[in-house]
Length: 235
Image (tube, rainbow, N blue to C red):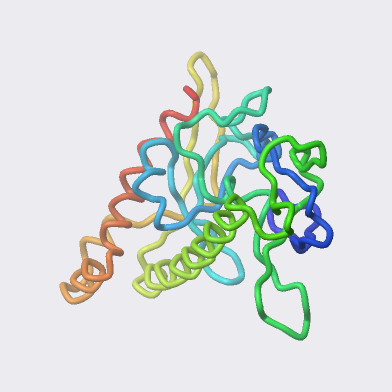
């Protein structure tokens, strides 16, 4: 099963993509996502615009930015496909690219692209992937570097959330939104946040470890971002 947004993946190759250009101006591919996976390196920028919470999967917990109050709703993408916040999560910026293993015999990751994205074209619009001599353009090299950093951040996410779980800091919670003039509210649930009381009761040695690893700062950034829930009706 492909990750959210992706419909098909093709390995980027000079043999097949020499004349392919990418024009990324339309973010309607994200219009139905009410949460976006995020990396811990983004927390300091995300907290000014989105609530950061955690969702639970088979592999553990994943930090996400909440961008909508209903399933299938993204309040940060308008009808023209514009992204409405100054900071865009890296997961959105990554599309239509990602790295993936393209062979069962090898674990090596290859840069791939979802050519179903409307911005993929062979009419010269946007950024080219290859030069005329079939060498990678500066744009493709920067994409590759970005994807490498994205994968590194994903691994750091796993370390961070595993520690939160080991310390039993995460609790399931819900938020009820009541729009102005509405008689009843809408409930958003199925996510986890850090329990402040459990955080206060940690042993000093655990607090010191969280501080030394940078996790304590991330915890405070997560908690500060929760105030952004009140702004979701005012995007």
